[in-house]
Image 1: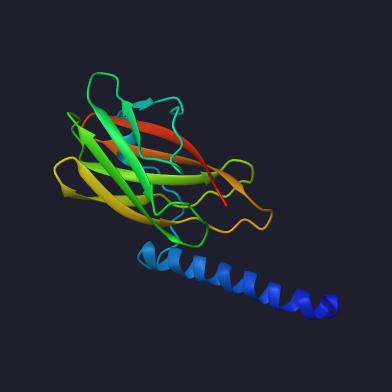
Image 2: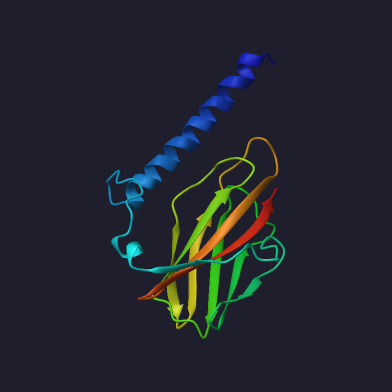
Length: 165
């Protein structure tokens, strides 16, 4: 097979994936290209960013104690975490008030940020949501998962690092 015959299907596939991503972003934002407009509440919130946890989300759920008491347990499944497969993100809070929770995934060894995935509360202190890791054409990828919990006065961001295959 010639290079041209191989290159064309790959190019078409990549353009198709980009189109699907952009269309999903369009509909998720309610048909508006609003960019990443800052949240007006962010100026009044006390923000605490925790250092990366000493735990690998690609291997096991991770538990982190929070300043001021309480803890959170984060989980991404199914494992192994692979690109283009739907992931379920679970967040369990113990003795921590929260009105909302978000998951933000971003690439470390290649800049691949995307919009935060809102997590919905399914029971008091239990949140769940969906996300998909984009494919990395260079091979295995190192990721940062930030679980952000917000209440009336504060936002806490717990960071976890993991690898995908």
